[in-house]
Length: 52
Image 1 (cartoon, rainbow, N blue to C red):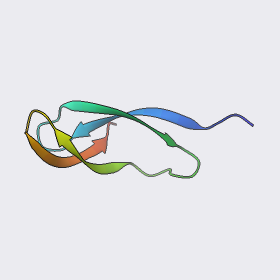
Image 2: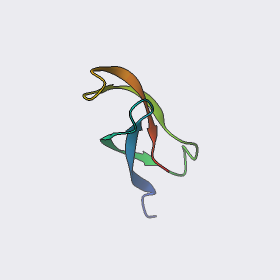
Image 3: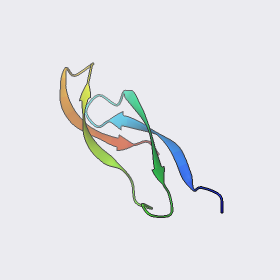
Image 4: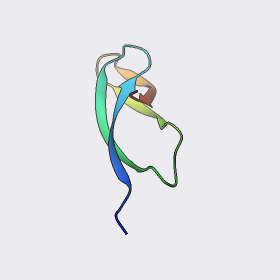
């Protein structure tokens, strides 16, 4: 069985810069990924969401 992991880009919800690359299993987590990460442009921790 092939692995269903996909690469995705995380975008800052404040300044809209694409700062991180992550992977997720599409089969077990079909919803969008949203995590608190450090944004170097905002210079603080902000919500980073999966790019559309």
